[in-house]
Image 1 (tube, rainbow, N blue to C red):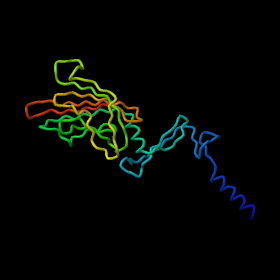
Image 2 (image 1 turned 90 degrees about the horizontal axis):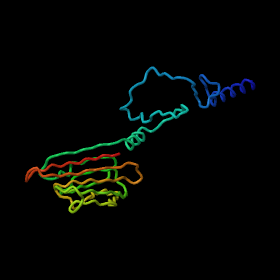
Image 3 (image 1 turned 90 degrees about the vertical axis):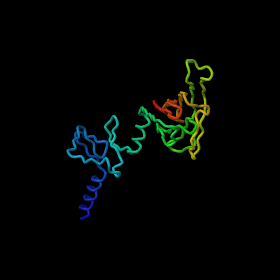
Image 4 (image 1 turned 60 degrees about the horizontal axis):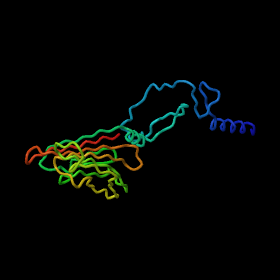
Length: 209
């Protein structure tokens, strides 16, 4: 009877701790397949939030998982992004907000080009500004100008910050900026132009590289 029990316990240990190889005699994982894999039926779970993992593989064919939300954020960080908002109004629409990468932009009252973060944080952004007033002058002589190493310091209150307090209608502003620790460069353009004495054209364009 003791011999039978020893054999049973030994077999159980082998079952619990063994590695199975298909097409290989030297498996390195619980299931090691040296060959192709076919799954004949897969159910679409794209709208099921409990399916929150994505299967990923390394160069050796080892399969593991990557959190779906983390993967989406990583792709978003790496992707080139282009956004544009254009509208006609008698005054700036502060509710017309353009989200681009980690920032949001709008025309504030004035009109004034403004920015805040998508996710509130304690962060300081550095940016350069090209200010071009509507005229026949092509150079950046007065009133046209270029300013560098400007800062926008945010707290978790995430208030809107004006990027150019001297902005007026019929002015083109280009801003070049990056978020701390990111590899992305943002180019953001603001243009407010008179159409009539009471109607104005507002345009915002963001390019994230």
